[in-house]
Length: 184
Image 1 (tube, rainbow, N blue to C red):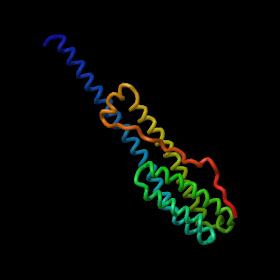
Image 2 (cartoon, rainbow, N blue to C red):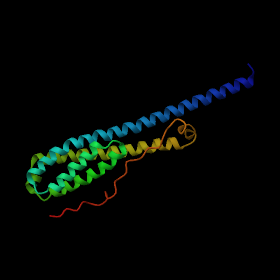
Image 3 (cartoon, helix red, strand yellow):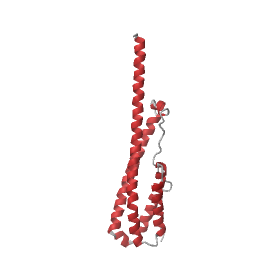
Image 4 (cartoon, rainbow, N blue to C red):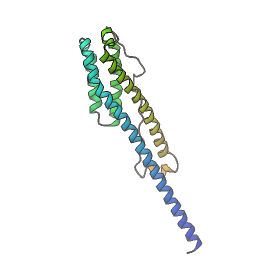
């Protein structure tokens, strides 16, 4: 073998190894994004499981607040029926607002606030909300790393060819910055 042929062979091998390394890194990052979403999904399901008990507890004290209770139930159903992560993100934002309204209503009922079952459910839900918030932040960090990886050189050269698509972050829903208004 001649020296120029060996040099060309070495260059080809180095390029193949580099492409394989880039591809494997992109796969790892994409799987991390999927896993981060799965962690959010687990916490959302936990919250969905707690909501019927909370609604039933409130019903006993605040029967005339059926509109608020129906809003929570509809929002919960929307999250359960959402087929895509983006749809679930949007429905989750609506559910969060409905739960804020429910807790604002509960403030008007001292007996309900003193109910041990309600306090326990509220604490569980609050704990779950904290976990969801943390998981959203972790998801967004992972999505940012993934999106940055597929947009930077040299990975950008193979990311498009290999079908790696940009992912959306979990954004706050419109109106989330405004506290709910409750009138009696």
